[in-house]
Image (cartoon, rainbow, N blue to C red):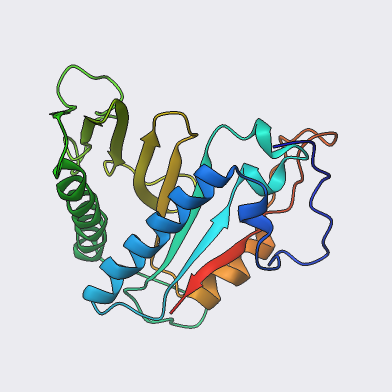
Length: 221
């Protein structure tokens, strides 16, 4: 990868190929495989409509090589009806959502175990897992495996919601940046797109990082 100019667009939704063009070919292949796998999982659950988008620092940094990971947003796990400007949800729906994300993590781990020369479950003493007390304490999990001299790790983040009302997992293949897959809670694709318009980060470097939350839809169903 070489030097890139800042994404120059008045629209937040970018044209096809922008996201993949700002990561390495090996990372692009990994992202495409992940997008297809997540889509297959949601289709089996008969969830729709949904979208999977490339987001994050890869699109916001002037030089995408500065991005520490590759972010994907998975949108379409909507549980409630709109009641004017008020949107309410139950704790049972939060549990349902968390179990859905955990289900994808378990599906992915089962695939990664196939043909691995060695693997281990990452739990217990690893302090990156438990993020505090609460109803989901102990839900975070992890997996590490090797095959043909190449390693992969997957870590789930289920105990707490992230900054954008999401839960997810991170996939790290040897030699590539981690792919962070975040499932957005209780939003339709159209709601998520509207929400991107209102996102702003007051702590950004004007010389290196845009305050706009660009995205590119990688798959929509």
